[in-house]
Length: 512
Image (cartoon, rainbow, N blue to C red; front, top):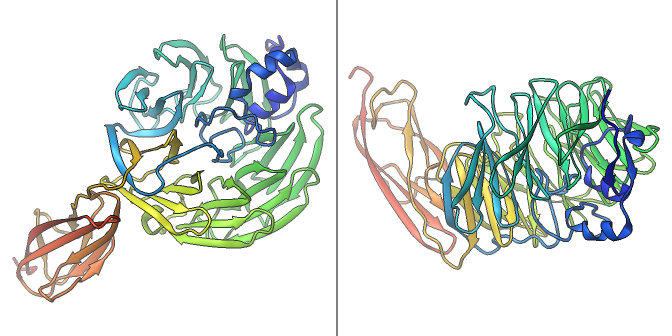
């Protein structure tokens, strides 16, 4: 028997706050409207209702900014013209949020709080005992002085946002924890792999409500304006359920046997990404949230497995090596940007959704580069190479004029009129067993992943011929003769600054 003591939640605030979480069964008996109108007005800073305009604090408190996964707020700001690195802290980061002047990051074992301005570590709390692939911490959520974090190791934690002290722990039903769907002053909402969603009292950690949906859900549920949206794998449908009554409002079949891989709800429309892992093509559909009628359908070259960001009537979709801008009303493609290394085009897996702030779209990706694009035209405003080999698998977070991105560490970027660039590269060849010694007749791969800064161009001089031999962050060359070869990489910043690095390679025949 679960504790069904009513949480002090205003119905409208609750339905907005739960955004991407709550399934319906049992909801009506577990919660009731106990909050007065004056109390409600005092709490609007935590709401995420996109239609009522009551998001008063543009902090990035959840994975998708708010519970509807919209990835945007009109008052968010980030670097617009050019970016420079303000601070960097090393850590294998799984997720980042930013609120109240603090950046909260999850790693394999810890939740870490950094001062957003200085990068100083404020606290670090261990929530997983072993640093293995089977033991990690998902992206945290921040609400009302608490940081909530779920782990692969079957536990949901509430930490004090100021000190990192553990306030309570809640055991999950299954080893696969799930992402936190929504959180406010009263409750935190999450899923786990036992095919259920649940609500936990934010103050005590007591379970208040659960709903078992029974079938595999390849995408996270979403709730908006009193309706729960569930994408089922077995039946390839998207279903809308009324939260108050548990009544099914409508059901929409997908393209063929494709699954719903991602959902965002905005402006009366459910935007759903469809596809199958490892297969192509995929689809993006717009569905009227009242009637279930499909408004439009757009075919994509890969599965759409990341939530679209929605801003000012445009969807920004990151899938299959492209960032696409799509008219939210018509489904017409406005522009697309080839992110080159921003995702691994040989893999079906994309990185993370983009974010949008002040007319700029930010997207990070596979080759540790953040792209900042003009939201209207798709033209690049700036790029920043992080000088690392791991992908930027975390959505870039705009927060109070800065941008926070992460992979091998958390990096804070600021607006600047000029910024230095640093050239660095690695060379690799199958079968090569000595540093800087390579075989004739076999391709050598050159990668500039460790170059750093707002780099606009990569220029390679590999042969003795005049001019530039190749351009790009990754290039390949086959040497035809034994010799000592000098390879030069020149990187150019978007403000004209240049840095150059040269290495000598020993090229030998196979018989040596």
